[in-house]
Image (cartoon, rainbow, N blue to C red; front, side, top):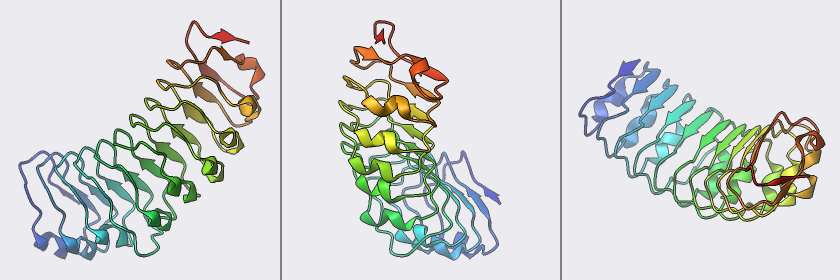
Amino acid sequence: YLNLRYNRIVYIPNSICELKKLERLYIRNNSITNLPPMIDKLENLITLDMETNKLGKIPKTLFQMKSLQYLYLKNNLITTLPQITRLNSSLYCLYLGNNKLKQLPKSLYLLESLNILDLESNMFVKFPKQLCELKDLFSLFLENNKISKIPDEICNMNLNALYLNNNKLYKLPDTICDIDTLEHLYLENNNLRKLPDMITNMETLRFLNVQNNYIKQIPKKDRFKNLVFLYHDVNTQVV
């Protein structure tokens, strides 16, 4: 591996792409503005950590790397992602929190093995529908955006954990109750007035946080199938 973290690096020379056997590259906490387009020449790279730099965009070749499993791009200045032009079966974790993203490429579904996707603290005002095509996604982080509505198609996902806290949600679709894998649902600090009627029938739901909303009544914990933790405001009526 190569560790270049916490330096004053402003660019990555193309020559680094000649390190054919490199498996892990750590360059977080620098001042890098661009990745070399030849990055895909690192054909054995498993982990790339570029968190906390000054990246404004990333090359499309980054999503063509056949061995890359863990991609850390949090705390940059990324405004758009490139279109994904071919099937990617390797990328497992993608961290894009605290950037400037407003939308995602329509071809996102080509990241077919994506398991963890972090999009917290970006500039989304809509829940990107293409996320609903990521059938293997386990954890989705969308907190600290400005999302007001979730599409009905969310029921097509197989999520275990969904983080939607600190948004502008005023309503949840009834179809969210059809996600039969969901265990953790974070909804605190939104504008919700009520919960879907069928939420108490969700057999896998273990953790539910609805604090700091406008919900006047909420079902008692024992009305849920298997809920373990229920967090709500003290002035909310439990029925």
